[in-house]
Image (cartoon, rainbow over all chains, first blue to last red; front, side, top):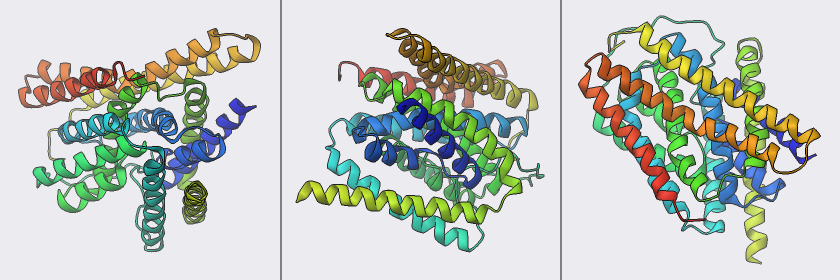
Length: 265
Length: 99
């Protein structure tokens, strides 16, 4: 029964992720913690497997279209992988409440950011839809590498801390500060997410913080959901889905805060 | 693009990710289906293989990119890829003995 629920959860997380461009980790971690009773650290580790699955499935499509800047991605991966691995190690010393507080804060911040950007018609996440048509890319030269590396270090640390991809940091930095075209920035961010998540997931796995019996059905569901979502994305009203996603994020953040308050009383 | 675009390079890396993602999916699915009919540790071990394959996929992707950069005598990015690979491998050392 639990396996079937996890398959369905993974499927919808993958579907929403592919349609809105938000990785599944941001939804999976709190749902695993709140509704499946998984300790938050194991929930983070387990959702990282789903994040890698989404990245591997979608970035292969971006690569085939040659929209990924592999050299830029590899350079920034030096920082994201380092940040993710070190933070994943340090998470072992964090207590459960601190992690839940951080996650609730991150959910609220993400929901508000998506709502603000969504209302302006801007892209909300880190994954351009693999189902969308090919666009010609103008010539460009990435600038401000030190800033890009510093931001990538922070994105990697957040990934290791919260089990997310870190795209909402990487994409704006590449696009706004490094002057990389948006389509290349989203594809390159997606490409980097797999290695970033793997850097921390390896540490989580070695520590016993990835629950295989939860990770496998989630990854299978996410894989199918993200493939379907990528095909549906160009044909459906993304705005409605974005509002749905934001509602779920507010609900999960509120639930986490209530959970914390109950612990204090 | 800022760099010379090399479709063959992109295709090789994409192939690694494609094979990795699909093989993990099928192995995990096999574990889940096996769990419906067989009790005990075997289904869980099959799922574990799928999860480990998934964790290994980005590592293999970095190894392939590293090899291709050195093959093309693109030393700068070859060394950068090697640096990423070392960080990934150090990750497994970080976690040792913390169960």
